[in-house]
Image (cartoon, rainbow, N blue to C red; front, side, top):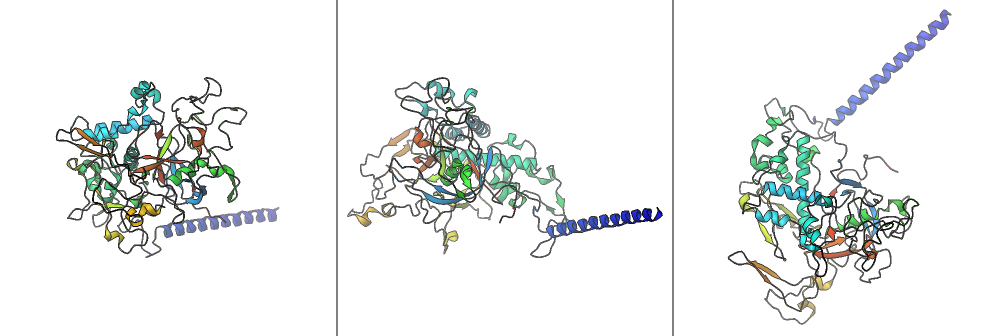
Length: 566
């Protein structure tokens, strides 16, 4: 009995020793990992030392999903028309592309979202002040797009944008330029909120914006002390809710958030054509290992516009024009539930969780239109429309921040006036030979015309036809050059509109014409195919084109971190 008791005590002792050994090894391992994480593999110096030196967010795991966005894991796909091309225009011939992971709005931008933007502009740049009146007017959607010479639409003209009954409907009457400005505004507001939540800014600073004191994320990154017009009470780190570290020498570190902090996300923007088409297709449901088993005609599975599921059999899967004079079907069962646009999320999302990627409204994308996609030159993150800029620099080496007296306005082809920059933003200028000299990847600031696919588009007609030289600016020998209508103002501010009556034009395509994708409530089923592509002037708007925003992904291709794969 005593022998048995002795053996039990010995086993308990051995178990305790083993447990202590495991704990000590775990602590050593943790300390080792912690030590290596806080030590530079380049120099051996400490990182994030409270005494100063290199500061870096080594706890960053992955990019958070911004408000309104869903994650789209990138990959390869066949971009372009994989079904019959009944129009025979061959402007969407199939080609294989690869798209990096990104984020996209789960719905179109709604009237409610856009009126929030208008409200901010109205509070920040009061239109009662003559200097700011054109800022607000330039952001207003064109509600007159609803009018029809032989149709009654005054109810939509007066109510569609602002009435709460249409609050969750997609905004229309917005030009491509206005959509880009909305995305820029959204970038600043989301970054401002993230910095407030992280303690870098005082709370509710977004409610205190004024023309001379507002937040711009690029200004904050490049010259944080100039943010909010240099208002020290907002940006002074000593007054923030964060504990600012002070070194032994009395210097403060981590005063402001930088790119290295991981708090500031990439910009909201319009999706590229390749991104939009990839996201709309939702090809994951056709995936079989690393190949696709079949083709897709719509964002949903199948070759028809009606649901085949028992519960919803016969219901339309999108909002579109079903035939001449038929914008929704007979009232009641099997009607698509809308005659104009429909409330967002009225139909099932695709496999990526995106709503209305066909039907409801067509959508602006970032690309300048050309009849072909030049996959011979690039098949990775394809995009035509790059115009590279850089920050303007003052003589003293600081960045040039726009003030209320330096707003630059542009007069568009339709006579509308828009602000090209707003107070608080850094003035942008084109890149020059300092950035392009001996480069192999780009050689000028404006690359919209690069390899645009047609010999005549990149050569003057005089090179191939017997046409005399002329200095008359009203004439052009470039293929992609629309009629040059001219808009000016007289001394009283009245618009003077001159129409180009020339018959020598060869195309309506130019560098200011943008692609829009997806069918709309006004389109037949043929246009619901995500591969379809059309174009429209970037400064004009319609009652059937809206938009949604996208955001680039930083870090790993897939969510959940860098899991090793075979």
